[in-house]
Length: 443
Image 1 (tube, helix red, strand yellow):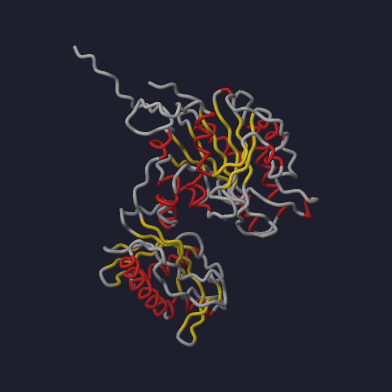
Image 2 (cartoon, one colour):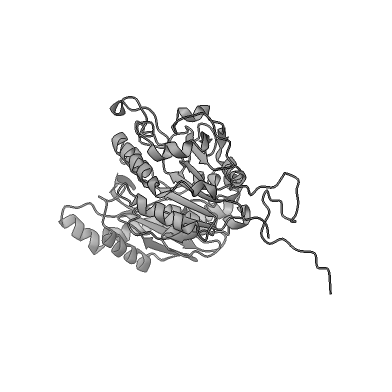
């Protein structure tokens, strides 16, 4: 049995990276926080910067997470839809295609549908469920393909399509803006299966046309109009993906992993990578989440797991609202929550804190700027940088790395790596697995 090595707690603060804000005296939200606890871990660690994908490329949360977990998004990314499905408890079969979906309000004129509100006035969850039921009953079959709409929170849903000879490499029909027309679903220019993508497009476009007819006469929408509310009279689709098996995180890195998160997407990613997903009371995926409860749950999980991924969404929510003060307050609460991590933690564990992408409050959207990274542990070569921030990280020992470099870095900090070229197993690994095959000496 190989030496166990240290455990790892990886904290991903969604949208962590930012720029200086006038309302914070020219500081970023991270710079404005006192950092009582981040400071003490910084003394035992090093900082640097991560480009989750590559410099200048604003990643989505799904692509950035896969990259940070050491997966090649150019070859292994299945599309976002299956992660959303998994996070919502939808069991997909191999080859099924899933889209993220929104009920929206459109205005029909001149043979097209112009988007008035992409969220149908943030139609409530119960109404979404009723509309989805109507569509599943009346539009559930197009040709030989089955369409199933699963309601989620508020206006959100997941569309699952089952059929043969289909490719998920198609465009969104969501224009991602109001005042724009609902789009035709088209094959991607780079689609590897143009025929399958074209077939899926024809099916999706037929389904959408029929859905609009059904939704126009739905009693739910008639009732909303009578009450002066926007109807959910179209379905916007985006982020298609195909369900396929992904190599488990445990096989790739040798860790028994668990996830603590509030957001559906992040739970879905963890599930598809084979992590144990733990539900924590008060974990909302919003700024009001119980940060301390999530930290305590993560520490407890390290008793029978050796890798815990803790995701906090509040930073990104504040960023998208342009709320620099709110983001700073969330980071202050996070720093306070690290009171739960005692001084002996680093004797048997590594702590890493970073973000999945930058979301500057001044831009209120993802940017291609790098995010700061802190890694603390007894095998980490510490540096002289005193604080953890976007600017100070430029002078840290870790330097500037890409997302795909994070897991090897954490493996090494946890004393789990082997020298390049060492081959105690047929698989090409940079750690010694637990399933080594002993030589049988016979009777």
